[in-house]
Amino acid sequence: MVRKKLKKLVFAGIVALAVMGCTRSWAAIVTTIYEFVPEQSTVVVYGRGGPYTYPIEGQFQLTVDYDMGTASFDWIVTNDIWSDSVGDIFYMTELDGTVVSDNRIDFFSESTDPTFPGRDILLEFTFTDDLVHLTSSTYYPRYAMDAPFYTLDAIAVPEPMTIFMLALGGMIVRRRYY
Image 1 (spheres, one colour):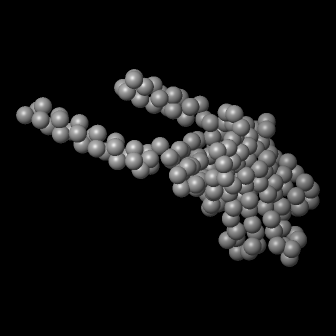
Image 2 (cartoon, helix red, strand yellow):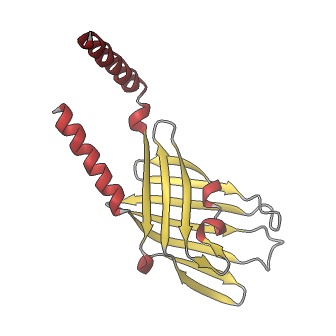
Image 3 (cartoon, one colour):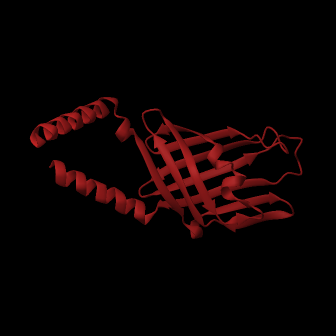
């Protein structure tokens, strides 16, 4: 009796794996936590009496769906630049990401900020070796001359725990199937 149930369970597992393999949904979505490198990550604020340069410290989680060609920031936690975090300044969790190539993702959004309607944000996310390069600028309409203008130039690396979990998952799969 136990053998019969085990056979049914194994058969159901094989069918589930075959369905996932046909839809490829299990391999197409990648979620990674990244950590900013403070020595190589800055936000420059123009207006409000200067340009002022601030280092960025913190993390963010990025989810990329390669089959759909989309990407999104799930969350971002950074130090504050004046009174806002980097995620708030660039509306990162609200940006729509498009996978442009294997090593580049573009994020774009027209801000819904009621103070400065029409504030467009473009963020480029480029994969280079084991790190990512983020560049962005905020664009304001011409009538908002007194509004601050921000630029982002940052380097981030995958969080060590993320790399460990990916390696551990690869070892488990390799041990079970090879």
